[in-house]
Length: 247
Image (cartoon, one colour):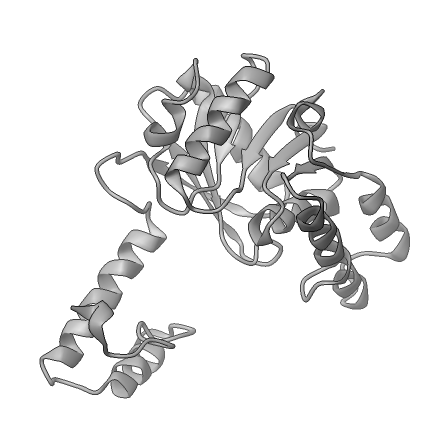
């Protein structure tokens, strides 16, 4: 049995569609809202036919064809934010990582949702306080940072701001566990960007760059050392190059 019946997701990009699919596969009714119909069409295509989509789940034996069809029946897509949140039990914001944009979204959500509906941001690092100040009652706002691809990655960082009500944290924790993921609890840090994973990874990347700058080891050897010595799936400088962005 699902923890709640209906989840609204604002933003139909990679993260929004991935989170939505994860919820659909676990029995939830999901409405995804975006401002562009083309983006919504792409989201539906991604959910069904994408690299981590429902068809792949069927091929891998994780879903039956009937379960796939049932999941798609529980999916709604809309450009109307009021329709998206109508009857919802919680809202997850998953728009691009732009603080001004997120602020506008939360301001709108504050106007179109009942005061008892929890609101979550999937921001990868903006503080909850920085988005909840757009909401009349910030006690109903928390962070729920899913990792990409959300259909596969196990971790969710649940972020509690000073004003967040504990019941909002508890509800998302229950949902995260119900869909088979692992929650970790994070206290909001308004003066810093990043929660646990991205903040620590960022520090590792910068130290790796400094090792290369000092001539201690090559970029390739730093990556090999961290892959083989610490069993990381990728080195801290994978895909990066020494250049002006390091300075």
